[in-house]
Length: 292
Image (cartoon, rainbow, N blue to C red):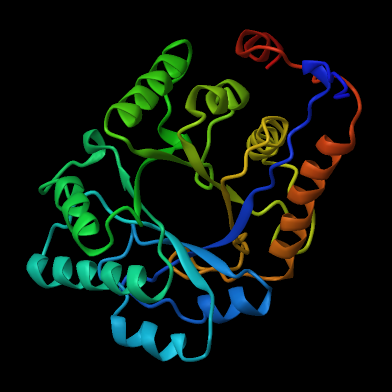
């Protein structure tokens, strides 16, 4: 006889895939990012190319691939390529993505919203065509949402709801970037509920600072991870390493032991949600809005 389990006591069983957030330099170098990610047992990466003038070369990737390094699970790309040598830089971007799909396990490419592209032709249509031709059905396209660009007030949830409807209409995923300067007024819990189930990647800053101390100045990502655990989110969470105050703004940050600790804290959050036998404290998006 099958026992009845009340709805309020069913707990999520999913766990997220946690990857290392890395970025290329202005001129397309990944430095030792892949090596450091592998050394700290991050077996997949989330690569940010939005601020890079050049994409990493295929030759540099091949030299590191022989060492059996991590997979490249997701890539953030700019919405357009502008400036000098546009044709060469665009060609290099396509070669990079083709190689990442064929040899490095790329599964998602993330573009900004077309409204955020100020100059140059939007790459969305061409990217969809190329990914569909090189790996039909293997690579998902996603809309990248920066937490720092979300509206304030009641328009915030309308904006997110509209974004989800757009993603549903065009069969796109949504990636939420909380690693930038996220304002305190972001309604984290309600935002996540508006974007699910299209939300497949969440990018957060490391919870442990470069000095090894718990970062108390980032309540947003903690609340987001808490609601993700509550919802049984089994997508991807990307941890972006903390920047030391002594680092220059244009230098890269590398994965360290601090990011391993952040990964453990996130998984502990999920484990506590599974073992907690209390009813879930939040029952609706409206209640989230009242309490936060």
